[in-house]
Amino acid sequence: MEPNFQITEKKLKLVHNIAELLTKYSIERRPLLLRKENRIRSIQSSLAIENNSLTLEQVTDIIEGRKVLGPPKDIHEVQNAYEAYERVFSMDPYRVEDFLEAHRLLTHGLVKHPGQFRLRDVGVYDASGRVVHIGARPQFVPSLVEELFSWAKNSDLLDLVKSCLVHFELEMIHPFEDGNGRMGRLWQSLILSRWNPLFEWLPIESVIHTYQQGYYDALAISNKENDATVFVEFMLEVILETLEEVKVSERIEEEKAEYVVLPVLKPKEREVFEQVKAYLEQYGNIGNQQAQELTGLSAATVRRYLSLFVKVGLLTASGSTKGKLYSLGSI
Image (tube, rainbow, N blue to C red; front, side, top):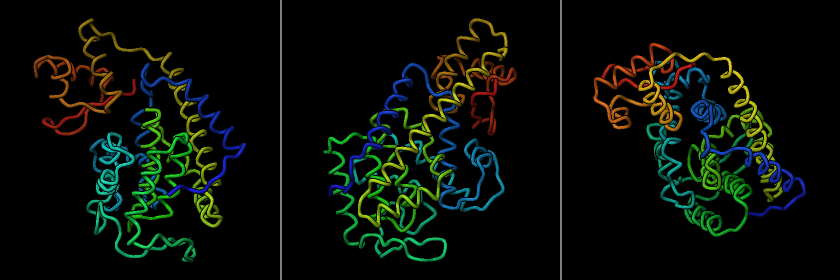
């Protein structure tokens, strides 16, 4: 299946502006300063669009292993989403089995059939309860998704535009009983990350949440017109604004860093800290065993170094003694 859309002057300008901003970043040269924070923002925003009540602070606490008071279902959604986001970017965006596995990760313990295409008809309703869209008949869902992924895999269309089209078509097919919006947004990020690794960490969902009504309106207009142009243009605007926001955030963090006085470390302590810091910038947290493997030091020596880094504010620690995890501190 080939989605219906038009190449417009507005679309070309947005693509040009996005590409221009991307050239100013080099994820290989240095990771995003706010990488972990961006992932948390993505998760909180994507869930908030689907009426999850937890705040950014609560989502952060859950991901960092702290207890939170809130609806159990909402907490479970956060835990599932974090696991899904940690694993999905190693998946193949054009493999149906991976698509189903990502849905299973997102929804296990929350829906009756996690990781399975729906077996009944579904409708999409607006705030007043009016039906605004009917998903594809269930017997056609597997073949429609297969055809969409086959088209996307073989299409020479720029990934920026292609990812928007896949997102739109997944919302129209509505392949699952629940979780369709989350999957559409996540799958667009996965496709984009294959084009540029920066998109694995870019909180696109956060800007979608800001313009949530515009997101629904763009879907509705494109659905009504049987033409994805309006939705593609909306999503390109979202991507551009997200890049601009991240650029500003990084500049602020860099300016703040100029005024931070780092603790005085001995040469060996500094060497170990730089190893741990590089690991944390990529993976978010580290345990004692991982730190031993990373540095080649004994368990006792690693514990001493990590305790020192926590004491001087370079790291923060969470969890029990045996399962303690360390992440970068505020200094």
